[in-house]
Length: 373
Image (cartoon, rainbow, N blue to C red):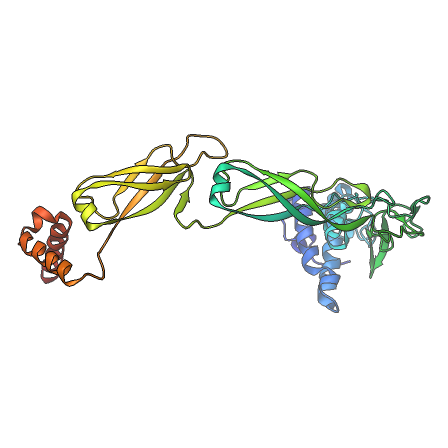
């Protein structure tokens, strides 16, 4: 028996509750466990001390004797085994994680894995909704053996190693642990005559075609769940689900922001200055957009109700047109001369004809003035 104080070993106060003792022991056991510290004699000693301290302090009678008489009060009763009040629970909690769930009985048959399919859509289909056929690889229950893995006419047998429990008790150095049976892998059964179609797995690989109903208004990152269309579970357990992940391809004209659509509308300098009317695109067809005289670049025009109806409900978004004024290029001599005449006619009336330029020039002057001061 260690002569160090048991409370000191577990690093707890003398008033520590049972949950606090268990938490302290879990921490130390995970730190000094021999399997995590192979060939480390010091770690093994510290682990034994922690086990010994917990074995005493988790037992109400032993703890009372220890508190009153110290090590002398428990010297004959604390000596080594793994029986003792409270230790079994901590042992199961701690070493079940390491060795596969000691003390939990036969492993449950697992549900099939969920699958994910990445579906690319055009913006038009995402907004309007569509039906898409997809083909996905998956595992399905073997029809020959109905998912049992055994040859038709035969059945699985109780595992001889674990007697059908799915767990075996193994000796790990100076203590024993319960872990998943290595022969049946926790199922509790073995197959002596496997099915020739699935070779005892109970599942076979295949591709299947599915129709996916894509609701109107879906957006990037949305997922559509197809229940039961994932991988088949083990031994006829329920199948997993298939999640269809939506990816909307970039559009050459529109950008989407939630329920709104944005598009850039290039206009000539003449239309910007004099105003006019032009056609703009929408997902529902062509629309007329009135451009008032004196329109500046980046001006936004909102066309209400011409955006997207969200898939989760709510008002239809808007189409927002962002004006971009184009500078004329490849001018001939006559056009250049006309522009020069136009520029000369403007004179120095910057404030009147170019309000943005006037405010920018004023701001620049103020900036340099501030730098001097």
